[in-house]
Amino acid sequence: MDRRRAGTGYLAVPDAGSGPGVLVLHSWWGLTPFVHDLTERLAAAGFVTLAPELLAGDTPPNPADAEARLAEADADELAHLVRSSLATLQGLPATSESPVGIVGLSMGASLGLWLSARVPDAVAATVVFYGAQDIDFRPARSAYLGHFAETDAFVSDDDLALLEAELRLNDLEVEFHRYPATTHWFFEADRPEHDAAAAGLAWERTVRFLHQRLDPSTPTP
Image 1 (cartoon, rainbow, N blue to C red):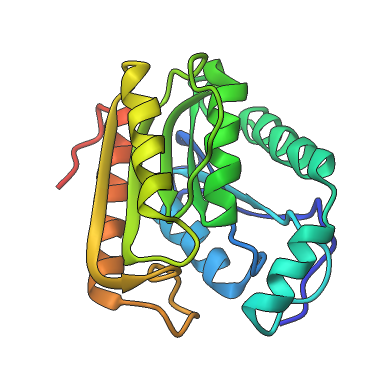
Image 2: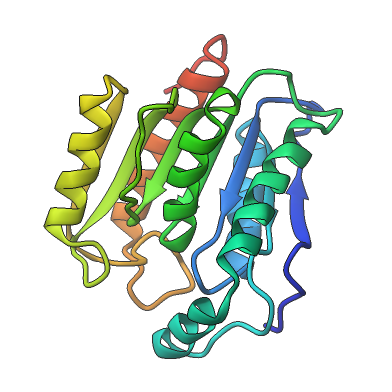
């Protein structure tokens, strides 16, 4: 699928017409049909969901090309797109005035972690799929849910241990899960690494976490 220019996005609104906001930040594959579907699923679960396109160009055919495209991206522009997307989501008539949630995949997970510490009053819940970040989390106010592969060429055990330690040292709420026999991108249904059982469990945990942190009055399974 050919993709749009950076700065566009995909928005899904619950049938009720309003709800807590969730920002979906994609992996380096871009705003793929899977991300569209994830956005719709989150809307069906009651969240006003926005998924911005962060990288220009077509969907890369392989990890090497995806990594090269990411290396060519302007870091300041990426940061601006993420922050402006958060502001756009919060400014929608359909969203409540409360802080929002973030669901980040790989590259998007790293950006989401960064955003949670840079705009702390705006982010109450951060869901991370196989991504890490080494920054100062002292300003953060978010709760964190992490989904990680058992074997991951992109997130080492040291990366994960450092992230968890940094979050806990700052007295932040942290819930991390490792999924046996999985690898990077196990959640993304359009990837060969997809693991349906692990993805299903991660989805259930994600929806429950987001409801508990963003909309605690809504009953969850």
